[in-house]
Image 1 (cartoon, rainbow, N blue to C red):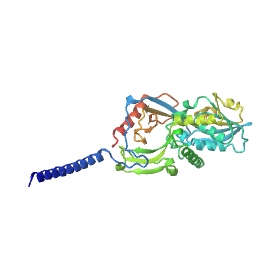
Image 2 (image 1 turned 45 degrees about the vertical axis):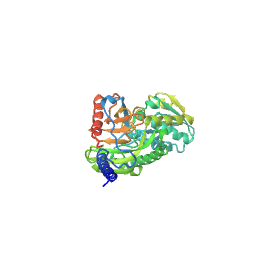
Image 3 (image 1 turned 180 degrees about the vertical axis):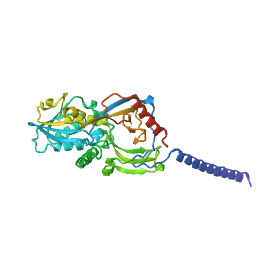
Image 4 (image 1 turned 30 degrees about the vertical axis):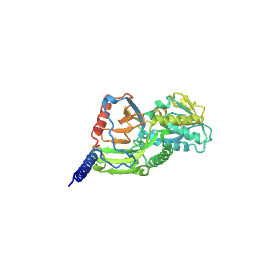
Length: 383
């Protein structure tokens, strides 16, 4: 064998060994990659799961809101006082943002038979704003009377997931109310879909309900399944969460600050007016020049209209800086009320559900529990 033949053979051997080594290395890397990057199937997102970085020193603010709750459900009805009509739209518990367009549509329907003229709306939260916009669409000239501008309203404290939850108590609310609730939910869901996008701060995200015991299905998921997509109970190998039970849906999240600002601007551009005024009793309300008055005062209705059933439910929220990689919601999985919602400008961590508590001060122990519950979930995420 000559030197040329020997060199050619040597090159072939080296090339073959290199190819085998490369294949082996690629195979090993592939095995490691499959271990390190678990490819859980996701119905909406095209990215892997990432864990938000949760720590006490990341807290940027803590806020408290009071939900206006009635065990028998929210109130939409018309009452006559001399020559004036007061139409109520209040008491939506934890579902105010979700139900807003639908409940406000029910309230505007109460004007049937009344001459279209000027209307007063009391309250500039989400019920007041959506009621006012629907009235404008129906041809009314509208003035909103409010003690606080929208960004200081209870609605602006809301978490913002489209889920009409904690609105009433099953077995206490009537069947007639349940039908009203379902109607309002469907109308509102449709309205939000029509507004979906960055302009109104509305987008679709996966939501994961977490539990260490079998999850009791919420009334809205049980009775309104058509309003949610990709609903499934997941097996342990189908999700990364460190709990035994997981239910998944895809739903909308509404960013309250963006949404309220945009609806307020729509109201003003359509000729609406705001007037700052604080009402202390019914006589103050009846002194308004408008003959058709919408009561959207939330908890204020307890004193103004002697609604003894109306009670506050205190909710506390903790905020940490945003993380664009987090593109899913979680609800549950902690020792108490626990959830994580990513927003464009922050990550919201919740929460609490303290009935008949009128205090508006954040509680250090609740903040600690919210951080610890969420940290335990995401520090142990299987990713």
